[in-house]
Amino acid sequence: MAFASQSASPGALPDDGTIARRRRAMALCADAERSDLEAILAALRCEDGVEDLRRPETGLVMVRGRMGGDGAPFNFGEATVTRAVVRLASGEVGFAYQLGRDAPKARMAAIIDALLQNPLRSLETDMALSPLEQRLSAERALRERRTAATRVNFYTMVRGED
Amino acid sequence: MYVAVKGGEAAIDNAHRLLAHARRGDPSVPELSIAQIAEQLALLVDRVMTEGSLYDRQLAALALKQARGDLIEAVFLVRAFRTTLPRFGYSEPVGTARMEIRRRISATYKDLPGGQVLGPTFDYTHRLLDFVLAANGEEPVPPAEADVPQDEGGTPRVTDLLDAEGLIEASSAALDGSPVGDITREPLSFPAERDLRLQALARGDEGFVLALGYSTQRGYGRTHPFVGEVRVGEVEVEFTPEELGFAVPLGRITVTECQMVSQFKGSAAVPPQFTRGYGLVFGQSERKAMAMSLVDRSLRARELGEDVVAPAQDEEFVLSHADNLQATGFVEHLKLPHYVDFQAELDLVRRMRAEHERGQAIPLSEAAE
Image (cartoon, rainbow over the protein chains, first blue to last red):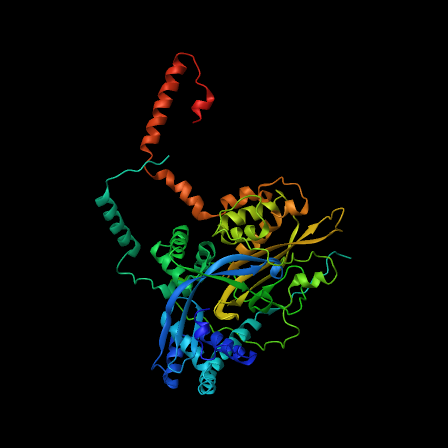
């Protein structure tokens, strides 16, 4: 909560649109390679004046499932997660929480999250993420096409002899 | 009892140097990289993640390399590493209904809505050794591709289909605010509720859980099971940090889920219907997920009013022995110096023999000490 109170627009909860855009960016950054984020930040030129409010730190999140897939929750195992919090010179506070132990990647994701909250930078940040989004969705489409080729139809043979 | 010993430092150091040498093997053979293990021994890595109870492919691969491929030693390394990390919290429950499916099969419905896809499976292979692999031969042919059928209402769980007729029990819903048990925070005590049982089974030794599942099929607590569905694929993990107040997508993990459907003869209050066992594990491991779902169902005996007559229905027996790290710790500690202990036993046996020669038996309670 301490970090949230330092946000550029204290008191004003972001509207759903902002949260949806930040969540989209967070999902993309989580799936990205470190080199993808390096390229995006190089294009956006914003490394100046980034302050680390929380240096990247690796910890654990206990992953939950549901009994039967849709019932009461249970804990089924942990995953490594790395988090980072940064503040831009313009005041926006960006967060990253992502699977794995890649500290530089988490810090870059936090910068991207901060940029998205800056009214002057959010549009170009969204656009800078689009090629990554296209690549990831093309990869997913290829995986789905390969899986679809293994679709199977079993036929039941009539049993018995008449 | 184990009594501390001292000495042997030089021998221990040298043994560890020799271990590092043995681990590397013949230096004329190229060294394995972590990436090679993670990519090419993927199912072994999945197993270390599941039984180590930590999803991190690179760490599991490193543990396997360090452990010379000893699975339980690798689990030990992973479990030890996790104790060095802070816990940020608990994820939102993963939504397996929204899985990006790589494999999905059902033994109960051939025309399952959403379809069946085989994915990368050993099923229907001929189990003939492929000597082309031994020769580091040909690149595999690229996978076939096919159009993805347009979404016809997603891929509902098979149990939802039976649900519509009321033929299958509904999943137990979460009670508001009821805490979710966590065996990494509090040691197991008995009776253990289903959340704890599932957590212990998920990290349980695959061989042990498999053998218990098998025992139920052979008649030791029979449940007449069918695989309603097995699905493998990627699910998004979401976590709500306190300071953000909304769910953050952390990335995606591969999981295997099994819905086992079993007969239930009903009771005074409940008409006959199908009951369910559930399995959920990291990575692609349908053997483990299926075995887990069989044992989950067996362990529901108490809840369903069934007689507890078989090992797989006895939660204290199953859960106390499912963890391979605990098991190996207790079994392998026997090789540590027990000199004092054994001296005491020697004395006792000598006394017993002397008494025996005099024709007098020693009381059993003392002998068993």
